Length: 494
Image (cartoon, rainbow, N blue to C red; front, side):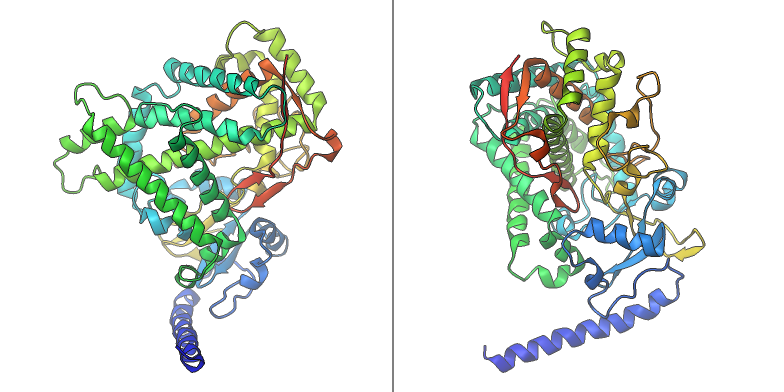
């Protein structure tokens, strides 16, 4: 293909985009969307969001346009909602109006609107969520046997840290194995040894896929998916990772299918397979595509959410050794060295409970929230918003809302302590959203964080390779998720 053909193709593409823009603009002109920066043809608000840190860019725009404003990701308008009161309206007060899952082009390319977490089909979501909550409860989610599994996995993790013999290592490499195994057991009914290649491969794929989705490459894809899909870049590596994870899940489902005992379901996949056989309704959502996608979505979210939070936790505790010392003191007083920590211990450990809440608040794991969509034409804060409009409920603006937290921009457990040093709840604490579409595994995450972190601290002092003041706790990547910079540390037995 010569240069003139390239130019012809380029002009054709631009012309097509302009026609699309001119045809879409009158439609959106009928609505009274919230104010926002003026979008450019084709590019939308790329100029305002191109810096690579979309979170900071959106928060900066909120200073000019207010708590609720509109930005365009390419042709697509998105309503950005900031601040505790406004976000609570979206999640709770008017939750049914914003209950549909919003677009995430990077993941939608693979999930194709199937599965429990990434579907905007409300009937599908209701059927799958009702089943998933019931099934996970049946298999002990939030009960003693799940806690026992986490305790056992935490002890395996401690044994691995002891093998490092006080050398400096990257903690994520170890922590992800433990959190992955907890989900393996719940979803598939088995765990893997820590050096198992399948376990290590899945961990690497999940982390790489989500990191790229949160990077500027992922952000560019969200703005221009039809073009970026065919352009070389890191996002293509992310797509390959997603394909491999999906294929891995399909193979694991097939293994469970071959070993299925209909009278003795052992895990989530078994229960779903049995439900599939019982369903005769052609409108049923219990089929293989939803099984594979639901399993992957629960597994994907559960592993990365917990491992990233725990990895960030250790870094913050080394950054603030006075906080760590108080946690150690409370562990020794309430639990001691002879038994495993359990979730109920937190009620006797107000400072530690406050620290864990503050870690989740401060690291701001999902700063933009997971996008929602309007379920019908609505009027919201004086603006007319059509059905199926995307909404970004900015969780970062809630977790750092100065009207809700006395120390919004610093790491300080006093954000969750009263004047008597007792744990104090805060309604603005929503690290994994809230309302009807809150993270399905929120209770599991809470249990894992407490049991695994406290087991580590019960057994080790934490040693950094640099003084606390030199430790960098700012995120390495900030987009769909916040990720700490890679760091090393040593585990010194207590």
